[in-house]
Length: 162
Image (cartoon, rainbow, N blue to C red):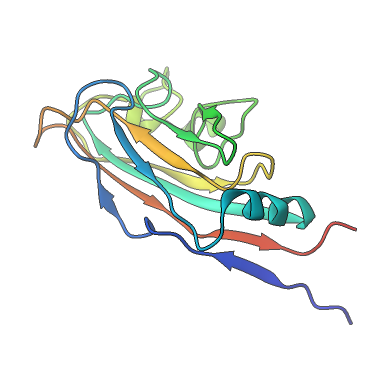
């Protein structure tokens, strides 16, 4: 029987981290530093059967992906306008894909921009975009009313492309 291995690559931003107060779209930036460089990690995603990276945003009174105030950056520098649990063709977040967001016209809970703590989370699984190079958020200047915390998981790749 042939066993499949899992390769797990950590980075410097795995714990739950506060988004520093700032107002403009994407003004907060957190660059992820991995234990290997982005070219090496992209080579890993190409030879792996599947890869994933967990992302979570806890937010209050925020504008996010749908309104263009938050995004993440792919390994090769592209601005990504979708979040975990969704995909590039749909955009938005997991709740937008399933129609379960807190506001029916929104594609992410964190686009509600109200005074309720909300969460958008899930796995990014598009191997052509992984690993995450950076995350950007904004609309957090009115602290403590506007607040956010992000959590970015390790890159996990399984199996081998045959």
